[in-house]
Image 1 (cartoon, one colour):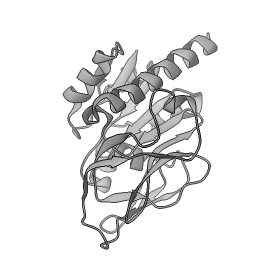
Image 2 (image 1 turned 90 degrees about the vertical axis):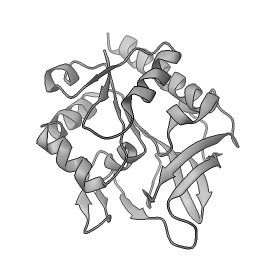
Image 3 (image 1 turned 180 degrees about the vertical axis):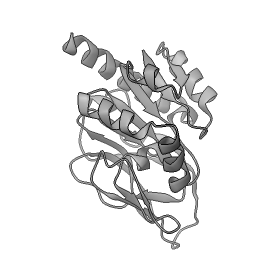
Image 4 (image 1 turned 45 degrees about the horizontal axis):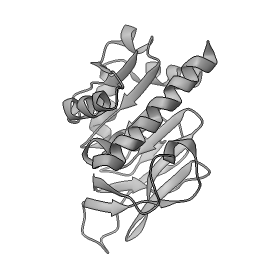
Length: 207
């Protein structure tokens, strides 16, 4: 079962429709018992970092997500969801994240208009399976004011907006997209398609 985590943040129906368009059936839920049995997890999100983490904690989902990550379940963070995968955000007075990947979240500097809203192109740093259906220079749709300020080997693609904005990351079974694939037309659907295929491969490999 493929899960979209519902913690009151983000337009989940549009993401669900995008997944269904590529024959990737998903269930929207915040029930721990269901998430514990998930074969893949999508963590969406918009809004404030601390509020999102507070809600995940209130629902008892933080330990569940960490456990699933440790067990090798593919997890995809989208927009704020990608930022939550990291250790810390400086937003407001600072907030602790899930800590699945080392790194911090900072505000986009005011040398450009904030928030970063609209289409921007992808620049690849390496070629991985997640990128097999898209091309360098393809455009995706962003809406965010904060970005991952420090990345290591997990960076697959970035966009330029005053600073280098990490756009797509992968650390083993943990994936992230700073933009909204469900709003990014064919490129977004192709990225979700590649994620779906990687989930299916992981499921077959584990059996």
